[in-house]
Length: 596
Ligand code: OXD
Ligand code: MN
Image (tube, rainbow, N blue to C red; front, side, top):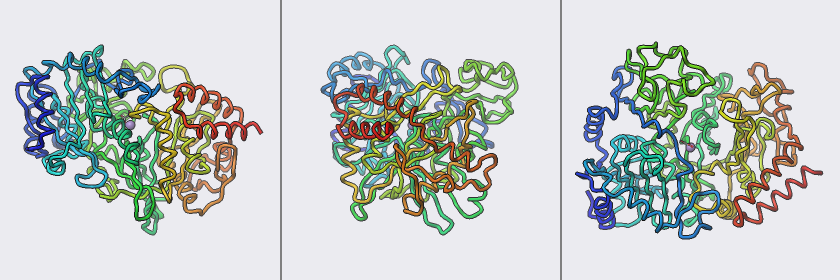
C-alpha cells in the first residue's frame, strides 16, 4: 500500500521481532472491516448484538485484570529523567527498549499483525498528524476504525516522509506484571504490551493525541489538551466555541453534548459537540485567535451513568455502529445494559456480566462494586458522526475559534460555581492548581484532593513544569487569546448534597462565561478572580434555586482557599525545579490577596 521506505523498514523490524504468521494492511474499507468483525465473532472475541435494535453493534469483554488505564505502568522514556519530570514515570530509552524487546520477541507467533495507517485530525489539514499502529488485536483495529481516520489516503498524504508516529501494540499474555505503556517522544514512538484495554492500546488517543502531541506541540508552538470542544448557538444563529478541561470522570462527555434547559431551547439556544476528550489548539495567523480541532473521529465514553436524562445525545450515538466493552449482555434481547441506563436490568437467567458470568441483578448493591453487572469503567466506542448534536464544523480544516477555555474539578467547598481569571498568565496559573476531590460516591476517603493540572496529570509527555512554561509562552503568541475560567458543578451543602443541578443547567453558566468574553456583563473582583454578580446567572425556570442559592455557590471562603494554597505549595515542590517562577509569583500573590 506504500513505498515509504521508513514505514516499510520499521514494519520489517517490528515483524522480525514479534514474528507474526502474517501481516495484513488495513485499508479503511467497509468490506475489510466487515470481514474482521465476522472473524472476531467466529473466535468469540466479539459478540454480534441484535441488528434490528442495535445495527452494526458488537460486545467485547476484556480480560478481568485489564479494565482501565494503568498510570503506574505508563512511562515517558526521554534521554534524561529531568525531561520527563517528577510527575511521570521515567526509564532511560535504552533500558526500556531492551526490556520491551524481551516481551515482544515472538509475541505474535501464530497471530496476525495488522498495520493501521491512521490520521489524528482531518487528513490533509494543517492540524493533521499521521500514525501507524501495528497490533495483533482485531478489537484494536475495529476500535481504531471508529476513533481515528484510517485508510490508504493517510499513506498517500504521508508520501515518502518519515514524519509519522510509530505505534506497536502486542497483547502478549495480558500479564499485568509485564504491562507497559511506553512513549519515546524523541523517537516518535509508542510501545504498548500486555494489555487489550482501550486507553492502553488505542494508541492514537491518550498516547499519541495527548502525550506525544503535547511534546510535539511544545516543540512546534501549539497545544494538545485534555479538553472537550463545544459550540453554543444563539437564537440569531451565531455560534461561540468553548473548550473545557476536567479530570477523568467529571462529566466531559455530558457537557460536550449538553441539551439546553427548556426555556433556553424554546428561545432557540443550541449546543453543538465538536469533541468530548481532546483538543489540539493552534494560533490562526489571519485573526490572531486560538483555533481548536478534535483530532479524534469517535467517542470512547464511559457507559455506566449514561442514560436518557444524563446524556440523551450520547445514548443516541451508541444506537448503531458501536462497540460496547465490559457491559452487561442481555441474552434474551441480545442487547446491552449497564448500571444507570434504566430501571430494567435484564432478569436473572438472561444476563451475563462483564466478566462473562451469569448476573443476578437482585444481588446488586450500590455500595459494593463487585456486584455490578457492567464494569464501572465499561465503555462505548461510537462514531462522532452518529451523534445527533455533532457540530457542522467537526470536519473543519481550520478548526473553530475559541472564545473561552474552562477548567474545572470536583470541589465540595473550595471553588465557586464559576470564576474568571484576570489574564492569560493568571488563567494558566488557575489551570496549574486544578484539583478534584474524591466524593462519597467513590471508594476511599471523602475530600481527598488530587491535583490534576489542566486535567493533564496522566497525559503530559514531558516535564509538568516545562508544560506550564509552554502555557505561559503561548500567551505571548496569541494576539487575541481566549479568556480563561474555572467552574465547579459539585459544591455540596452541609448534608453532602450537590447544590447546583448540573447537566443541561450548566448552560446557564456557559452563557455567563460567553457574556464575559463579549464584555456584556460586569463581575465582582475577589482574591481568586472575577466572580459573577448573583443576579447575572439566569435561574429562570430552575426549581429550588434562588438568588441566595447562587450567592452561596459563588462565595469564596478564604480559610479553605488558604488551606488549598498550602496543598498547592506541596504539589509545586513535587513538580520540582522546572516550575516557572511566574507560577510561584502568581501563587504568592494569591496568598497575599487571601490573607488581607
Ligand atoms: C478517558 C480518560 O478515558 O480520561 O478519556 O480516562
Ligand atoms: Mn479523557
